[in-house]
Length: 115
View 1 (cartoon, rainbow, N blue to C red):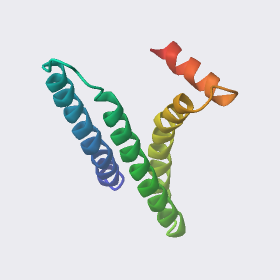
View 2: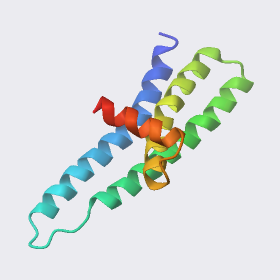
View 3: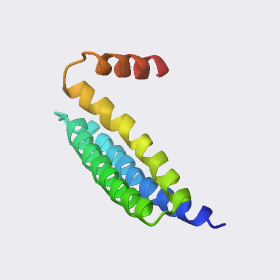
View 4: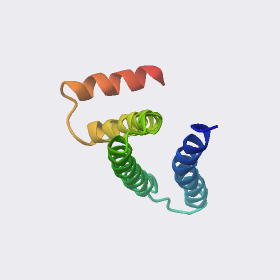
């Protein structure tokens, strides 16, 4: 019970913004389909997603530093797990924007293979 509450707090901290972005994306896409001349709503959603991931990444990094200084090791492992999950989509989007040399080619090929 001692580690369940911090995990649920961290999980909801991640799930609520991502669920909000998902709902916004569905509403924007359905509204865009109804237009006579559809526009590109995906770019705005991508920027919103990157901004959300970066804010969550910075927040979890600050929390990780605080937990390390206080020597709260179970929370450190939870923060590290969530930080690892954030680095994958951030690195994927950065690799799509930049060149596909070295690490980026491997990451994009791996994610394309998984899909």
